[in-house]
Length: 125
Image (cartoon, rainbow, N blue to C red; front, side):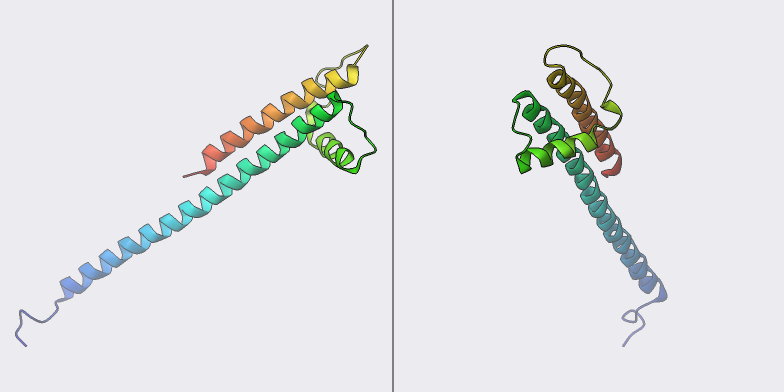
């Protein structure tokens, strides 16, 4: 074997640097994938919360039977999710409960969607 055919220390170092670069790129791709999945999960949670609020408001507006277990489940979930929007606007008179649900839960649903989308954009690579 001639001297030209022998691997040099420089060639070995170059290969090592290249493998470090591809390892770093692989690590970044993995981290980006995890961040993307977390962002999708955050957005999904926001959409489900908004869906509970919207369907709950619809059930109140349609005067659905509150003794039905599905209606009861959706309304209980909407009441838990309304948070600080529970008494944002208070209506009096005829159909006050329906107006409260449509306005307050509608605003809460929009806020959930906006916050969810902002968090999605912040988390996603």
